[in-house]
Image (cartoon, rainbow, N blue to C red):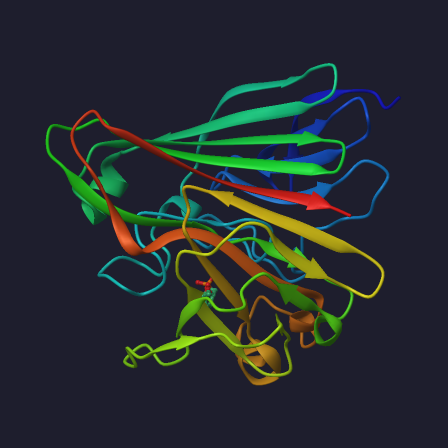
Length: 285
Ligand code: TA6
């Protein structure tokens, strides 16, 4: 048995929580951005990608792990790319290790900076749980104001892979997607491939995807489930775009595939006092 942990630590200069369940599953979550930067299933290696050139600087998002996109995905609106909660300092609400799990909940409330960008009262929470081969992530949004607002959201998960060219993402056959590499193109394509493979830059928004997705590598797999996050974004920048991203090493694109669970295509409408949640679960195999 491993020593269970739910411990406050410093991670590259940011406050963070180190979780370890008695079976040895571990995760590290930064208060900055409510950002998971590491996940090791019990008895396994790291399964999230974190760039060795990631910035750990206030105001800049961290490259890798699980950035949270809210209240905007990408550049679909007037806000900074993927919204602003990934560059805010969250607070710890709870962290504990139980008999067969360890979990933490982090919270961010609207403040002067967020209201300057987006004039709404809100509270968001991220709950992270590790147990054996699983990572559970739940993102919750509450409208704490007096009028309705609309948002899109995603858990922008960077799945670590050994070699992206050898990966097969199964479960998207027959699903409709929009190509995000050409934001002006509105046309939709039905995926007829048995699996998504990566041998060029790819950025797709699949709608209403089904569970589970299976990310197969030559000697291991990852099951990916989402709940109340109907869309899936699949992104890899490949050689040229990777070279333009300052916080990725030259071959960084080979080490990950983003498989993101989101509510993007149809933004969520939230009335005053209402709340919403979405989940993504990863299961290492
Ligand atoms: O989810 C895919 C995407 O929107 C890509 O287009 C790419 O820009 C990526 O996210 C990363 O965005 P970031 O702002 O973190 O560089």
